[in-house]
Every structure is written in structure tokens, then in C-alpha cells.
Image (cartoon, rainbow, N blue to C red):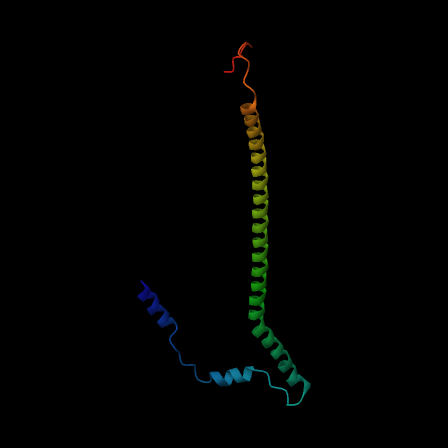
Length: 129
């Protein structure tokens, strides 16, 4: 199938000889040039370099602008990730401090229960189950 396409392209794009007198007809259709030194002959020359400079510089300028945008977006994403990690770390720290506080209170209660004097044998005992 690709050979068919290639053969069709070769046939369609084969070189063809220009008809007789083609060059003369094209040259007659072109406007006559202005005499050298006149303002009209310099006007196209002044515009062409500007267009050429812009054409030459547009791709590097666009590439530089895209790099700058990529760097700025990357910095923003990095800063957001760092901020989220810091917030998660602070939340984990708060939870840890709360857990340590609760554990400390429970250990104090257990210590007091162990150090409390034993109940007297004559006193009625409570059902602690």
C-alpha cells in the first residue's frame, strides 16, 4: 500500500519542462523596477530586513518565553508541594502531642492507682468489674 502512495507521489511530482516562452511572459508581467537611488527602490529594502529579523528572532523568543513560563510554573508547583508537606507535618505534630498528653494522663492515673494504700480488710469492697 505504501508503495502505491510513493509511486503516485513520484508521478504527481515528476519534473515538467516549462512551455516555450514562459520566462518571457513572467518577466513581462512583473512591474518595471524603479531607477537606482530613488526612494521607491529603497522602500522594499527597508521593510524586508525588519520582517527577516522578526522571522529570525520569533522562534528563539517564543522558546525563551516558554522556558520562562515552564520555570515559573515549576517553582509554583514546588512551593505548593512544600507548603502542603509543612502543613501535613504540623498536623502530625499536633496529633502526636495530643496522643502524648493523653498517654501521660493515663500513666499518671495508673501510677496513682498503684501507689494508693490497699483498702482495709473490714471495709466493704466494691464490685469493680
